[in-house]
Structure formats: C-alpha cells, structure tokens
Length: 77
Image (tube, rainbow, N blue to C red; front, top):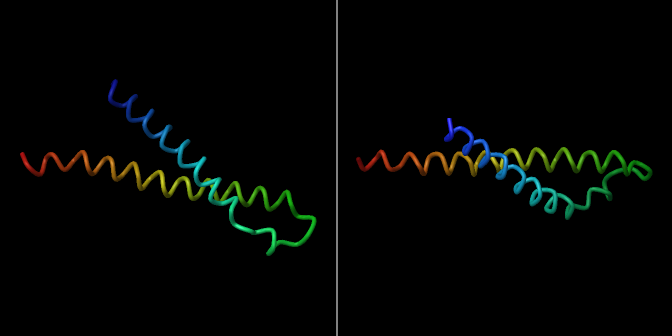
C-alpha cells in the first residue's frame, strides 16, 4: 500500500514540474500574432490548454521511462 502512495506522489510531482516548464515554453510562442485583436482571454486559455497537453505528454514519457528502467533489473536475474 505504501508503494502505491509513493508512486502517486512521484506522478503528482512529475506532472507539477512538467506543467511549470511547459507553461514557460508555451509562453515563448508568439501566438498573439496569429489571433485577432481583442481576443486576449481566448489566447490565454489556449496557452493553458496547450501547456496542460504538453505537460501530460512529457509527464507520461518520464513516468514510463522511470517504470521501464525499473523493470530492466528483471532482465539480468
């Protein structure tokens, strides 16, 4: 039961860290040039959704990488 809690904590921390980095990266995109003037709220919401999507993809990659690297020990037993 303790392993499940530790795994959940690792996932939460991974997602929080990746959402912070992905939001910084997405803010560097100049999407305002492609959106009509006066639609700043929609652009902000779009940036948040893009950051969350990127966070999920990167987070899943890192979590799977950790999981499969832990399974490598069974290859040599």
